[in-house]
Each structure stands twice: as C-alpha cells, then as structure tokens.
Image 1 (tube, rainbow, N blue to C red):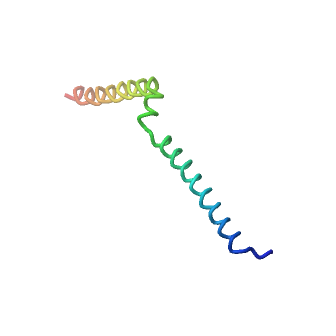
Image 2: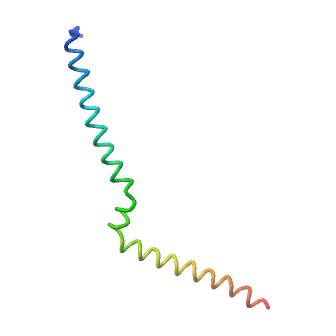
Image 3: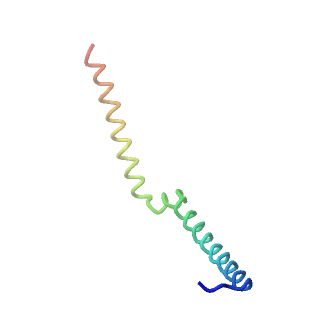
Length: 74
C-alpha cells in the first residue's frame, strides 16, 4: 500500500464529499417522488374511483345485510 501525500488525501476527501452530495440529492428526489401520494392518486385516478365504488358497495351491502338480520328476528 503506497503512502499518500496530504494533498492526495485532501483531494480524495473533497471528491468523496462531492459524490456524497450528488448521491444525497438523487436520494432526496427519489423520496419526493415516492412520497407524493397526491401525484400517485392523480396518476391512478380511474383505479382509485373504481376501488372506492367497490368498497362502498361492499360496505353498504354488509350494513344492509347486518340490518336485515335484526329485522328478521322480530
């Protein structure tokens, strides 16, 4: 292992800092895209509306069926 001069070490540290800064910027951009739930809803608006309609139908039918059980016992 060859000994490095202090200048080489400084240069290496500065290059590593720049690379780390770029990596952090990329990571921050990826996190912003992944956590943008509003953007994801807009991009999948049709699927979200269909899912909400199905969920409402299932929940409404369950409530109606549950209420029907109590009415039949009388």
